[in-house]
Length: 174
Image 1 (tube, rainbow, N blue to C red):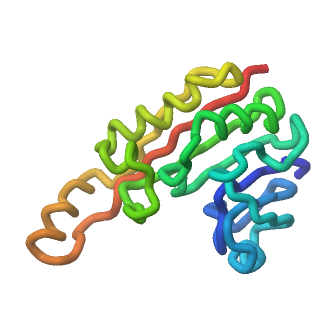
Image 2 (cartoon, rainbow, N blue to C red):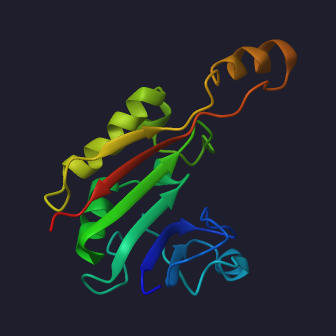
Image 3 (cartoon, helix red, strand yellow):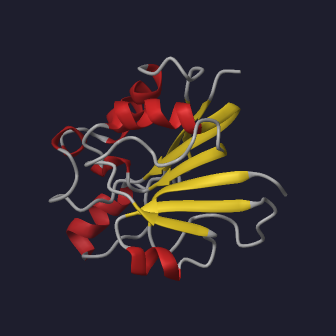
């Protein structure tokens, strides 16, 4: 009940269970109107991590930090990840989740040029570059035949299966 979570690069929805059993959710994002419409957020602040990669919170504030479906837009991800290590409590967890969907005009070049497996490795490398974290682990929650969507989109104009879904999870060293 006293757990404090940071939802980074948030908007009108946080991708958390609706039966929330933890304490406070803080959110940073680019659009205050969307952040204020988010029913799971207790505190919201506009913060552009591509302009200022130092999170606006004191050291050791959070038990967990999440970044859902937005890592591909970070221009200095290693710097951001390192600062996440500062605001996390020892033993705190970070989850960066992502799919193959993106706004190509906004995603960084290095993301657009990689395949799905390479993106997982890229995100893991952000955590490996920081002295704050234990070895990150990858989680693949993709539908078993998500690759068929590529073919069905090409031939049928619609996907027949769900999107791939990946997460990289890291824990702050004690």
